[in-house]
Length: 89
Image (tube, rainbow, N blue to C red; front, side):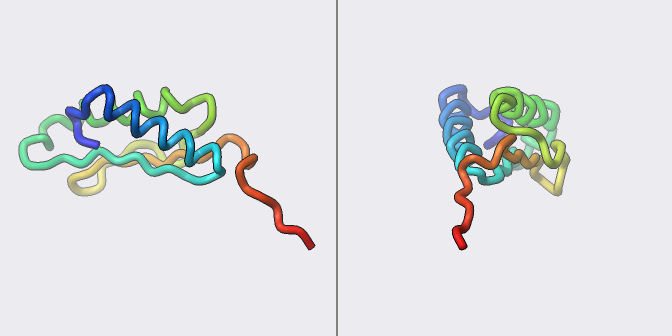
């Protein structure tokens, strides 16, 4: 995502992230800053926090949002491991 990601794009990405989390997978959400967008790191952090809030009912934060070069990212893990199948025998 970028700091100025549209509402529809945000909802689309959140829906797909929810599907991954329900399957038992981790999700890494990143906001990439290009050029002058680097001046809007607060908007990027707000976007990541909004993404986390959207998925709080099915996920928890494993790694808090942090800057890494020109991107800010956080890692979410599912609350339950329902999606993973246990091995038999």
